[in-house]
Image (cartoon, rainbow, N blue to C red; front, side, top):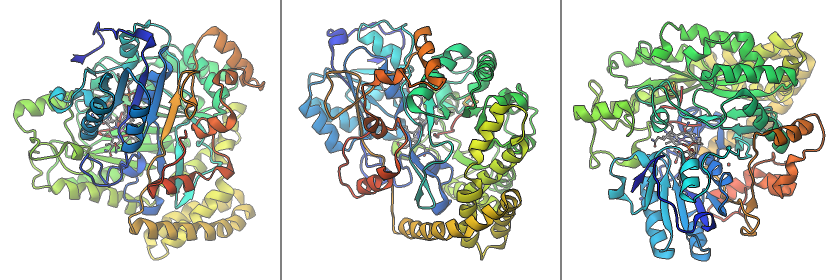
Length: 637
Ligand code: B12
Ligand code: SF4
């Protein structure tokens, strides 16, 4: 049965039902029969942004936030197994009685869903199987997988309804840091601004409705989205609660077009101003929406990092009409805002003759990061419907589902680009960006320095505090990183010069401190960089750890207990008290010790936690103690 928001079936056990939520099994960064692919690890940046930046690539994992959101919003006892191995998944369903098993997946992982459903039918035959997430849009999914319910769209309301719970209760928000095990240059990142960012999920979907965008299509398409928190007040309350619970200093805002609801954003700005919050926000936004704000408003809101759809030079998207995107990017950067530009390879007008020009145009934006994705019709989108009606889609015998992720080849016949040429063009785009603009790490240090110089003496203490915090690592760690990067490119005059300019900028700003630190820290980082390069050449990969969590006090002992936070006046008062420096009363709700919470990714790891060693162990196939959480297709905005 394919069920949507209006489905009326209810499980006979209602809230007494025992629920397991699970993501598809790993390992991911390997080629296998279930659709794992070496080029498709469970990562964001390394997958589709810094893909060809070798040891300079930014490596990090992210949790399955959709499942986390569902879990904390159910009254029924619900365990969550995120990133299990197949063996761990089997162990869970064999040893624990579940009435409902919900699987979340995207389309490329469909064969894993099929395998998991078979395992459930074998080991837990009485369980009702529910499948949600983007895989739910696959036409005729029932033909592929043996499931009871396929849920398209928001799973929170659907699951509440299925369990006989009140679907209109306010939405609780999971508490989770955005980055898991971040590292670059072969070094785990610790004590950097932005590492203790909480994930914030204000809404799903995007009303812009671009023809290729599967996240927009999934939640209603043009003119629609689902807002979990509609007002600035609600959002502020949730943010205060997350700040108090996670000790976070900023937010990774998982909303495809966060600034679209301008009333909400401006009210949030007022509240941040009133309460002296110097939070930073990493957001997705379309160009037209961005232009509705003044730079002072963006900076006041703490916008620090921005994912911006550039798509292509003459792309006819309304959101880009009348915008000089090169000028816009430069202006944002001059205010310290790091920009991730996203460009499409394979728009209808692209031909083998003009694609190099299109790539050069994208590269000329000199964004801090650049995502390139193949133009890909995904089920549910207007582009897919169009390709289907034109008969240009490739069949399952021509392309495997696991290869339809925008980083390998087209899943349709392009009007001009044929015979797999797109693979080479895509790689060329990443390569060109890396050669011309240098490592993204260098670019973000440059933007950070611009921001610091511009705002270090700002009359508003809130703004000053944020930039001071962001700039804290510039004179030592980042000076060292630049020194190491420059040494790495000593035989490449162009990149050597680029890096030198930024390093000289740091010397000019921070004087002897930076000059002293650069070679000292730099020598160590250079060694680590070279070691990482060697490992990557030998096929080194990273896998996310497995997470096991429960929302129930009677849940398994090995599982970390989670509760979400809510926006209401009681929690607001407590959050405000906590924000004002008192001990977080919200924290007491968690029933978790600091070490449990550290393991669950809700608190940053202590120096002694050695995250990279755990990841390394995992990579070698050892099982890690259950512990503890952007993006893609044509990623947002
Ligand atoms: C975080 C994220 C990731 C994370 C990990 C996510 C994970 N655990 O799988 C990382 C960075 C690792 C990642 C990687 C990739 N991703 Co990704 N990712 C996202 C992103 C940005 C956010 C997802 C999210 O958390 N949203 C917020 C939550 C609340 O929404 P949600 O997940 O949709 O969940 C809601 C519903 O879908 C539903 N639901 C979800 N699961 C379930 C389960 C049940 C049982 C039920 C009932 C309901 C339900 O209820 C939830 C609450 O409303 C989305 C874009 C987006 N904005 O959604 C892309 C997106 C999901 N990714 C996508 C892709 C293509 C990839 C990559 C292939 C990228 C690439 N080209 O290299 C890789 C795949 C890696 C791999 N080996 O599997 C596509 C999927 C396209 C498709 N139609 O299948 C998306 C939609 C981006 C896009 N616009 O194209 N990704
Ligand atoms: S591509 Fe961006 S702007 Fe367009 S619908 Fe998707 S999220 Fe919105």
